[in-house]
Length: 203
Image 1 (cartoon, helix red, strand yellow):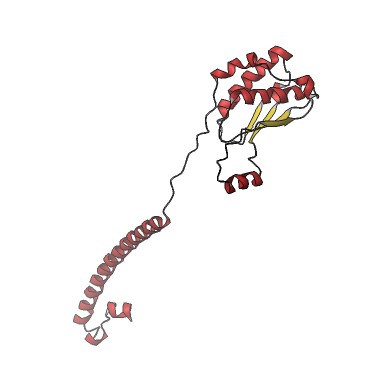
Image 2 (cartoon, one colour; image 1 turned 90 degrees about the horizontal axis):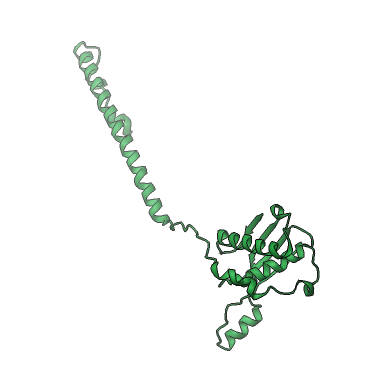
């Protein structure tokens, strides 16, 4: 059995109820042998038409949540679609809908022949409930803070690079001075020919 849940209701809760409802239906109608091929899509039912919503708004009236359960299924098929409300979930209503659509899948076309589920056969639904699906809400990222932290990290990298360069310049300047002193002493270099490293760097 495959359950495709496109609602805000918990999938595990829905699955438990559907399995129990199918077992109860099997007890009355006989075992459904294509259970492993059954595909059930659950969606939210549509709200009130826009003209109804606008009418209530104009008159300053509060519109109660629409408790609409509807569905469809392929005759002698394996797939059904069940539509349920967003605001509240009534297990007994859901089971009535599921059982009705299962009758079509079992091969019953006429709605009169299907009839309705006896209330006594739905007493077990009192022990079941459906909660909302848990969602992992990611904390909102402050882009300015994120960019600021990026700048700080970049500055630390540049400071490290600058310190490394300063140490290298100090090292090579010492070597330059060493050779200049030797060359000046041997007369191989004149004083006015000495190279100012920093003058070379900045000019």
